Length: 511
Ligand code: G6P
Image 1: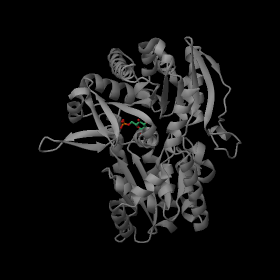
Image 2 (image 1 turned 180 degrees about the horizontal axis):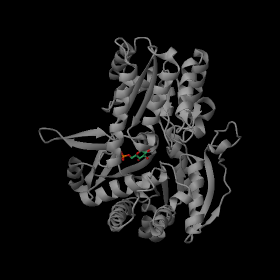
Image 3 (image 1 turned 135 degrees about the horizontal axis):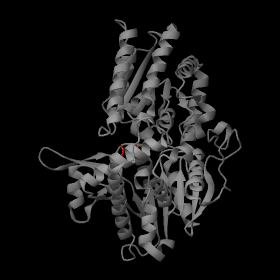
Image 4 (image 1 turned 120 degrees about the vertical axis):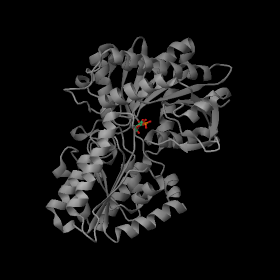
């Protein structure tokens, strides 16, 4: 009897669009969570009976969701889309998940003005509850004994679905003991003083929701420890902090099995609350190096490599690839490049910055304003330094996956400077795909710093001068050192490949 594995996430591995003739065409879902879960599932799919449950995001998705069962096969994995009323979805996704929980955990609120928790938020919060209930109902239905006679394991993804584990436990009753429930948070977690911004009952519900799981996972020890701190401070839960994962030196949540002699992966503790124990652990997500490299050998990527090489004209390439999210710190990254050119004129004409800033969450007003600031600053840099035969900066805002892979292959320097980031896969994909070795300038506030710190150039993401200096160092680095660091970063990224990320969580549910 195959073990049944149910994955639940807001965005699924595919989203549909209507073609002009009314037929459905599918598009791969974006973002690090999708890439990691898809790759992790591929490794366990042959031995398990998997279903992936996600929200219908487009009208075409809704059409699929309304078909009988709402389930379609995507690369060998049945994907079931849930048809959630658009208003409910909008309030849950845009207003609560993206405008409240995302801002909270990334410490992004413009505090003098936002957030404001009034009547409108109460309505939004009710929608978030309803949206979570829809997922809990679907998971409970998929886990019915007649649907799966053997064990069932449920992997609930991210901050959109923080209430689902508790709701599921309530729905499954006694059978919850046989059905292992894991929750994984792909973004950072706020410290208690900041977390307290949430209305008390909301803050408690989010923690209590996750504590319905048997296992709660995070990408870095810092986030897992912050979660434990909130369980103590907000819930008064009983927290046992004995675990195998360390937080490493200087609060970086560092350091592999490296400098601090601590592990970046493993348990950080256990929370007992309402008669149930939740194990809290760190599972850093790396990348599927073989799959990525195979993809990068495809013709479309090779064609982009040719084009980008021609554009660079032998100059060193400084690359950044982000979704245009407020947490990605693109404006300060561009400001650091401007400072580099202003203070170290020797690089003028000898470098080129490729900044790929792809659209994200256009429904959130702050995102639209941020996108404009990024474009404005890019124009200023080009006007200030550009010459007849040198374009210092190319900003691309149209999402192009093969072109991103090509840029990773060619980068001499990769800039990954988020204000705060759960993990960040680009920092790992760059070295894995690099063809001549790339130096990574990495924010110490990215979860990836916990694993990559020894071989990256770490920066304070708020310090533009320090970032400019790190880019200068990266550009000046001897080839041999750059290649050695790049190979070490690629090895670390590969060690934490998604198959291990997912397999370790399933294994913890067995205990
Ligand atoms: C980032 C986060 C993921 C999250 C995703 C949602 O990639 O790292 O944890 O699931 O954003 O993005 P979306 O486009 O679906 O709002």
